Length: 367
Image (cartoon, rainbow, N blue to C red; front, top):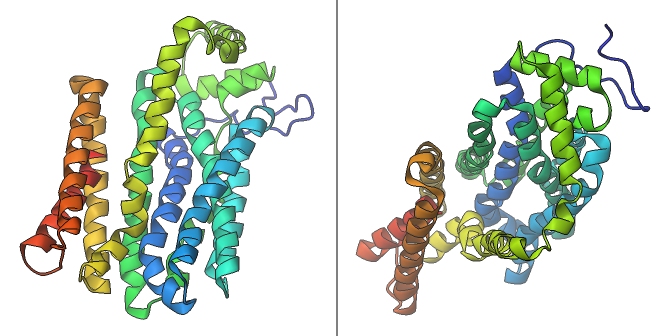
């Protein structure tokens, strides 16, 4: 049977052969690593960008925030096209957008082009923010789906850590262009690797490409009842078509409101300030460039370790308990930081500097 047959004008999807699971998850999560890297790299690069381009504080804010603005646009655009083009193809498009954005930003001769490059990178981040979790969820067997999807956050933290390491590695030369440009390597890896990955079985079913879906499911799960699994996917898809209307039903309003507020408030907690500006803050309280970047790598290690720890413990401790403990610790850390700053007691030397680093690390761990 020919499983690469085209249906409805769509290109063939390489699902007939089994792809090693580790390869799927590694290349599937590269988008999350790029997300983290391009988000975190500006933290150290800004120490040198602001000197090369003589940026004002407002311009520094535009350079930093451009990726977030682009991500908002990319997320919206991705949501509009993902069901039409498929998860795999949108991730492929994101790879090209990452390459274009990285090239523009790394070669930018002025702040305006750097901001433009960061905007393009943000569009790519929006693409992977929507599609990588969906793709990993739909490509994974149910028995490991939770662990695979939670890997996205770990890969984002890993990408941020790699950005901090890159900042430190290129800092002796002040080479912010290299700090930004090295992101082209995982973008190329994702661009190549995604061509060898299968399409989401669920998407194939929703597009009526049932033979390809059977091949993908067989490669993923081995000997399973394919007809039953496909029927279940069709049933879930039919039920989800009224999902937007059901979100407005009286019974759904409270959980929907909680979900939206949790996502929004998570961005107001201050994590982006630390992710983007930790070296700038540390330099402002008396640390040298190198000391700021070394300390920032420590923050990245803390983030990766505690993300991994949370993944391992969340099923035992419960989601709500971790949220409550994390919120209390984050609030306490920021309160101490605010009191130190207000009292003029911050400084690299002495106890105040140690406390400042400790509370920032506690905040990263708690987040």
